[in-house]
Image (cartoon, rainbow, N blue to C red):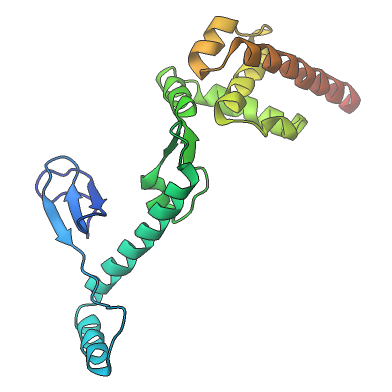
Length: 201
């Protein structure tokens, strides 16, 4: 089954309560998933179900995918229970079947949107590479904090000055205290980088 609506081309999503595949744009019900396996099965029921699976393997594949998505959905929900500041990227979870980098804070998601809008990803990726090479332990922080540190380091390397407090706070949704700590850490990383360069010479 395609991931797009056959009528309007919208993205198809799973309605877990109804057991339906629907279009997120026009609301068209594209398909329904039925679970034919009861809790207790007699021999006749098992034979009938196996024949049905052999005759319609595509339906069985959809059922398997649906059950997998349900398990992932429940697992993700357990991680964010009573934590309204966290958001789940269900699309990525269902696409990859894994929970890695799929749960983020609302503040980090806003920071990522700001980075995209200001076209700063290339600069941040440059800063991340430098930090990973010089002082990788510094990357063990929240997504927005990590991005802000990379931006600060990269900006100094390219322009020989640190970005202003107001700018960094607005882009990365961090506090003034966090900004000051990141500047201090950036100075340490840059000092380590300078020492390594001297040693190599």
